[in-house]
Structure formats: structure tokens, C-alpha cells
Length: 324
Ligand code: 5GP
Ligand code: MN
Image 1: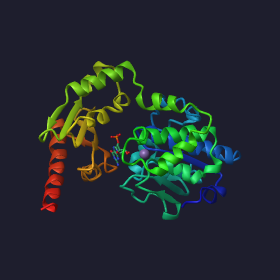
Image 2: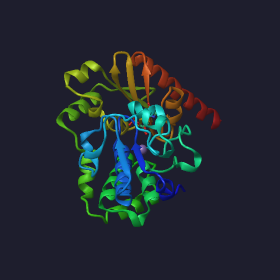
Image 3: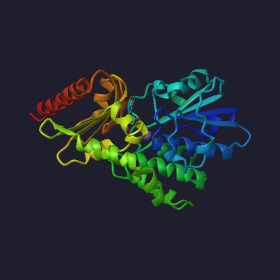
Image 4: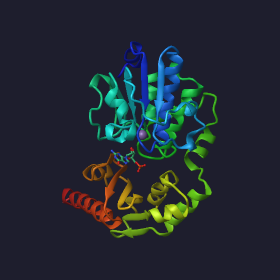
């Protein structure tokens, strides 16, 4: 395993960043690591960057320190959290390009070798990058600040310990984190379940307008720019919709997409054990995990549906061939 202290000891300036459209794990892993490094190395310059942070996570310690515009500074070390492809850094790509050394902590499948192997801690089976940060920081070094951050990351990426990425170790880690001074049920309520009224309306609308395809095995819903404008909403208001769609009985794959700019869609995919959406997303230029992946595609919503369902069909056919 990567030795965090060996890595950081001789560095004077350290930048941390996660991916664009940061989710709970992006915040949890970045701010959890930030809390640890700030305390361990009070004399070093440690900065955390994020593109367009979601105020939903403003309850996390360190949130107010997040730098939202990119820096040209050549940091001694850049630590990439929760992504393995530098294109996912958005405007913060300059940080990795200018850094003198790079490390990466991640649990995605499409790892593109953005850091030397000795500086990488990449385990696709881990529930979350936050859980990996916990390993690196070490049980004995966890404090109240890092505990709430890491707990939040785990809760968000496991769907409150529901998804198949939840392991015995995940539960044991979370159990230990609960012994620190923070309100764990409030974290679950606020970081995972709570929605603004606008978000509730968009969820309702997405469900109401969803359609079933492929004999009810696939559910699809689309939110256009027009609808987003009508509700004065942004992509941050669409979190959690695809998971709710996936709860539909008989559904193997949920496809939720929203129009980012005219003719471009951000697509979220969720599946069960019958379909591997990481493969589909990767084929179409995105990435993610076996049962939760995403991509961005140009064209109409019908193009997206045709492309994704064709890949789903392929997987059903392959499975059928294998079972004879
Ligand atoms: P979501 O659907 O919640 O945006 O993302 C689900 C998972 O897929 C997350 O782990 C996320 O990091 C990954 N993902 C989503 N969109 C993209 C994308 O455009 N490219 C890559 N490489 N991964 C993505
Ligand atoms: Mn993650």
C-alpha cells in the first residue's frame, strides 16, 4: 500500500483535487485527506481544489477552504482522488500538468495511469475512495474532522450501505468512524436523502415521464435544457434520480440523461448483476463501475438510447450464448 507519509514528507506544497461534478465521495475523500494532512503537516502548504462545489456538502469541515479556480502554481505534489483519467479534472487539469509529482487514490475501473505505480492506491473493489483514504490515513490517525468526511464519502458511494460494493470491511470501517463526535444519522439524512423542493419536483417529473424499454428490463428518462430552465435548476439538482428509477421492479438497467448544452447529454447508468454498465460507458467514451457508470454524448436523446440499448442487447445475447 502507498505510504502517505513517505510520499508527503519531503514535499512543501501539496494540492488535492477530485473530479468535476464532485459527488459525496469526491468531497468525503478530498476533505478527509485534507483534514489529516493539515493536522499532520501544519508547516506545509496544503490546498484543496474543486470545480463548482455543491453546497450540499458545506457541512463538512474544510469545505470553506476549497479553492474553486484553477492555479498555475507548480505544486511539489498533486494528489488525485476518485478519478483515474485527467480529463475528469475539468479546468483543474492544469494542476496535474504542472505538478512536480503526482499520486492517485481511486476505485474506478478505467484507471489511466495518471500517477507512477508506486504513488498509486487504486482498488476497483473498494466501496469508495473515502474508504481508501481511511486505509492510507490509518485507523489511529482518524479524528472527528476526517471521520465525518470519510463517513460521508462511504455513505454516498454505497447508497447508505445498500449497493454491492459494500463489504464487511466497509461496515467495520463505518462502525469505527461512528465512534467519533458527529451526528451519523444527520449525515445520511442530509448528504443522501434530503432534497430541495425543486429537486423533489424534478425527481417526480423524471419518474412520471420515464419509459420502459426491452420488455421492461430498461427504464429511461430525459430532462431537457428547457425543463431545467423552467425549474431554474442545474445538474446538481438531478442527483439520485437514476438510483430511484433503478428501484423499479423487473428493471436491470436505468438510463437517466440530461441535456448539458444543446445537443449534448450527460448520461447516468445504473444496473444490477445482469448488466455491466462500466463496459457500456467505456465503449461510449465514459467510465465508472460495473453497476454505476456515466458518459457524455453528443446527438439527440434517441441517439443516446439507441447506442446504450444496443450495448445492453449485446450483453444479453452474450449471456444467452454462454448459458447455451
Ligand atoms: P454518475 O452517474 O453518478 O454521474 O456517475 C456514476 C459513476 O460513473 C461515478 O463513479 C462517476 O465517477 C463515473 N462517471 C460518470 N460520468 C463519467 C464520465 O463522463 N467519464 C468517466 N470516466 N466516468 C464517469
Ligand atoms: Mn467514488
